[in-house]
Length: 289
Image 1: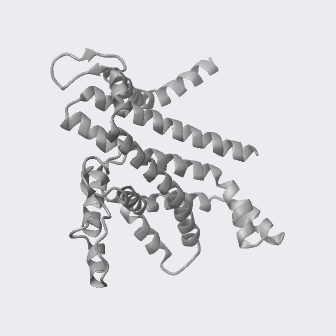
Image 2: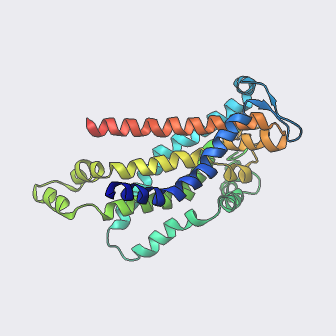
Image 3: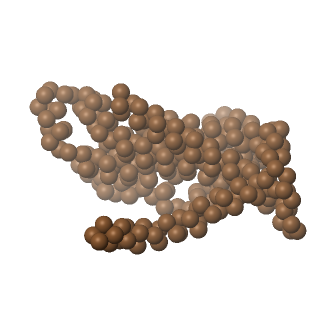
């Protein structure tokens, strides 16, 4: 009887969350998978066409361009955002004058709506009216195509994404640093470990789980980037600056090709899961090694 009552307690506690997760996550994903196998333009009855939408995407150069842009943003963000946010957390952990104010200042962009962040950075990066090019013109440097061009746009979007996300990642690292056992740190100091040795051999290994959390959140957020691209470039010119989600929006709601749009959504979900699981597997193997 005790086991039965404990089981029902678990069911009662987990049940509501499981229902909400199923309704708002599992069902939309399954629904999208079904629609990705159809030809549907928003009216009439969907026509089942199998995997033709996926085969059409394989021959779509704009899809591959959006995938390339998303991968560039993901790689740049992982390479820069994780160490920068961890370094900021280490710095702000020290008891320095104004530390609380600095933490609030760094965290500030994380609470601004992404569409407003995009609007702010338009006035900084725009090739014609942007602040950076105006400053460059003042010292005789010709304007640079920061956004809307062939090369720099994904890197500019990466910079804006890092600026908007670094405070959130820093907060997670800061919380992880706060719960590190002080006795271990003191023991390493007594053993003669330098600050760099403590960081490399004590702090970082004990925060592997925190690094994994930050990385997974970063990966999922990169695969959801839409508002920044929508405000900065609108995906132009000719979809050269689209990400997967912004191109999905164009295909679904502008071209009204709902089946193709759902196929892109499924691909985004699968890629996000593969990259996240791959990172977890690699981090676990390193931990075992």
